[in-house]
Image (cartoon, rainbow, N blue to C red; front, side, top):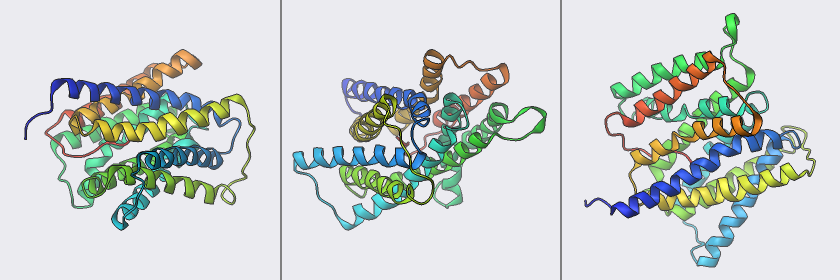
Length: 297
């Protein structure tokens, strides 16, 4: 198969950097918005807005149609996506935006290990090396002094990383088998439905319609969800999975830069070392022997 033209590759890479910057910046945005809204209601608003926007766009283009396999794929992927965002958003109440981003980035390391557990992917030396580096980095990043206890928010965010890793595996399995537009819309709509179903009984639903909540819903719904999923699907037809995953590894870096510039968040030496080890683990896994897998939005 011929390689795609260089200009197409660079254009796709630039688009992926753009949505990665959006994802990294929204950690701070969501953390502030959660002071004025309950977790599940915020997620429900975010994914509902994204679903409506995507459905309207697909209908306008005349490609809004569904098939059984696409619906099944979207339901499974959406459930994993909701799990990832639920625990990430709850965890943000109790940890810092940059720590949340670095722990979420562990999903890249978890993908080959979970794939091996499912009997689909054989881990390579880079996978095991990345897992060891990530474990050491996670310990430095999250363990609280001599108590050797992980913070509550950090633990929830670690669960989120497993959810996103499962989402990567599910999307990697179904993407070649169904239409990208259908998969994107159904998984986002599924996440919206799960959030709406849970926000009335799993927690007390409340919201203060402040400018930061409205802004966060608009940015995360339209840019970080509807636009980001669409751009990722477009870009991955023009660049390789490895380049895509390497670009997405910039997400925690962008999150830390945003937290530093907006909130003045500064890492202590152990936390900075832990973040560096996690980033090194992500790069080791993605730069190791060719892995043919897809990465989360």
